[in-house]
Each structure stands twice: as C-alpha cells, then as structure tokens.
Amino acid sequence: MVYHMGDISKILFWDVLPKDCECSNRLEIEQCESIHVHYRDCRIEFDTDEFLTFCRVLAKSEEKYRNYDRECKEDLFIKLSQELTKVPSHDLGTIRFEHLKDGLIHVHYRNFRIELSPESFQIITKSFANAYSHYTVNSAFEQVGIVPSKPVGEIAVEIEKINPYDQAHMRDPCSPFAFSCRNENETKDHEKGIQLCMALLKSGRKMLPISITTNEYRDIQYSGPLLEGAQFQRLDGFKRFEAHKRLGSKKVTCHLYIGKDAYPGNQRYLPWVLE
Image (tube, rainbow, N blue to C red; front, side):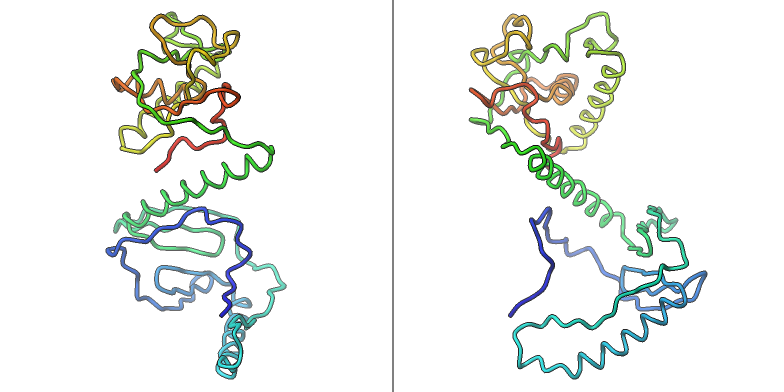
C-alpha cells in the first residue's frame, strides 16, 4: 500500500504529544467578516467565493470517494480537489500570536489559525525551535559544501583550565564586561548573547558543549599568549563559556577536537540549544 506524504528530504522533528494534550471536539462554520470553518483546534478562513468553491469541491469529493473502488488498487492517493485560481479578497499576509484572557493561545498564519493550551504552546514552540536548528544546520553545511568537524570525545573540564580568549575575544579589565571584541558593537552583541545563554541555562536547557583543543593543537597566532594554568584552548563557544563562568560553574562540558578539526569557529553552523 502506498501513502503519499510528499517528497520528504529529512524529518526535522518528531515526538509524541503527552496524553493530557486534549483536542477540541468543535465543528462549526461561522459567517463573520469572512467565513470561518472551525475543525477541532484549527480554523481556516475563506472569503465568500472561495467558501462556495470549497463547498462544491467537498460535495464532488464525497461522491468520488464513495464511488472509488479502493479494494482494486494499492494506491489510495486520489485527487479529489481542484486548483484555486483566484487570489482571495481577504488579507493573507499576516502572522500573529494572541494570548487570550482564558489562557489559550491563538496562532494565526495567513488564513489558518490553531488554538493551543499554554502547555501545547510550550511544546510546539520548543518543537519549532528544534526543527529550525536541525534545518539551519543541515542547510548551512549543504550550502557551503563542507563536512562538520567531529570531536574525539566529550569531557568535563574545569573552567580555570580553559583559555577562552583569542584575537576576536580579548580579556579586557577596563571593559564593564571584562572582555572586549573587535569593536564596541560586537562586544555589546556578545554580551547580549551571554545573557541569553545564562537565561537558557537557568531554565534547564541543555546547551551545545564548548569546543576546545589541547595546547598542542592551538593556533598560537590566533589564540595569543597562553594563560597560566590553562591546559585547553577554546575554539568556539565564548558566550556559552562566559555564561557558565558567571553562573558559578566549576566545570563545563566540552567537545575535544584535535588535528585538522581543531580550528577556531568549528561549531559555526551548530545550534546552541540541544533540547
């Protein structure tokens, strides 16, 4: 038996919803400023002409479906529809999130709306974030035609044994942030990123391990002078490192790279948040 689900390149996210995520039993059609068709948690919006076309297509589809000899063929995919040729009269160019007084969340996208409980909203936003991370990582590597670096292992390292500084991230006792980048705007952007990482860590999110290498493989010209007591050089993840440090972490989870994979910025296309 063949099911048509589209030409899927890869699954970006998949999970099972918890049992307490209830689905609405609503089936209702309203005539408001436009026609609203409510089906369970979803609402789709039509102008009058499009709604009448939709009704005619449904009627013809039911007839075709009932007359279709499903037992004779393996492929159950049958085209029961027709193409829409006109542009709808109502505005479809918006995306909007609404928090209702009863606690529910409405997500509007063009002529589609889905109604979510706060719990479901939290699940779906996390799902989109994870899916987007996988999408951007895969797309970025495919576009630039490179193979991502592979760590030799994951280790917990004492923060004091890692040199986090290099030519792009310099220790600066005169700076209010105790570091500086190549210009003021870049320094401020890094500080915003550090604050975001701190918030994510406080909320319990799992962050991408910091990229490090041993002193044997560090780029001396880029990394600058070796800090006293440092046994490892940070390659990527300055904001994550600084966030852990400010939150009082004694150790931080790292990915260890050696050889040709131990180059600065080798996590460039990877997502910060893992889950």
